[in-house]
Image (tube, rainbow, N blue to C red):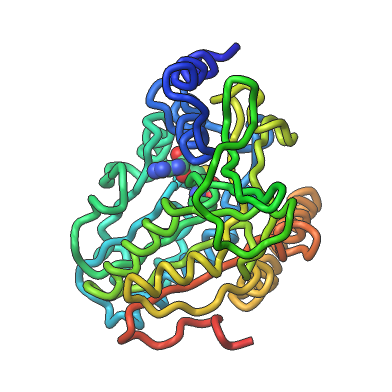
Length: 346
Ligand code: SAH
């Protein structure tokens, strides 16, 4: 039994079964035993691999996107360059390297990282030096905003409902593992056996960012695995050491996430007051940003072994059956800005 399993068992004994969002929040973010609070989960040795850890090209292309976005914003002399869930800080480091193509960008950028994990904050500091950290986006100071989030929203808890015998029930974790509790959802459409997912915390954050964009001006780029349209389906998953495990297996020791519903996320940004450019696949985004051209340049300077690693990385990031189609990229801006390339261009 993990220490967190014991704590969760005590809460359930005192208060009854808990909805998935509370369970997931504890598993990932419990101050002492939460998954992200106790480890660096990334890389071959860790539990999972993210795009910035696969190749520097990912962050470089996003850096070029950021430089263009800052230009479109009218090159404000000071702006908040915000990253939600920066992991090891690799993406931000590569963004800053690549954005050097735009004179003045680095001097104008005030770097704000939204990160709950003290261990990851330390790794981010090692890589980026002294920047400013926040527990939540709400604490980022006002000012023109350029915001990036890669694999952040999938880690924000969600709720699940399942229709059984004509009634919607909420999925929960109880003393006997996964179970159901009554739900007040009887008007929702669906057939018996359907699972529908709601992520009010995700929508709340997206709406807040939308409000900031509308108030202070700027752009946001959201990258994550997920679907373009809201649809029924159970996408909750737990991963440990690159393998899927049961969500209730060893709480606090596996990464629990779900696919991001980009339609719901877009609605929340719009509700906040931002303009949303519908999500495109990571493949389409990276190819349009020059993935192959950049890889060819790096390749021309590399030895045979590095070239093979590079080819493999490109295939992983953009391959149709790898991350290319599963991951989506969505942009939101304030209403005064033009449509950012490469959105709506396809
Ligand atoms: N963007 C990074 C890491 C993705 S993993 C990459 O692509 O490699 C998720 C990141 O979000 C981690 O840094 C984790 O600690 C952070 N995180 C997860 N939930 C959070 C929350 N509720 N508040 C702040 N940070 C959170």
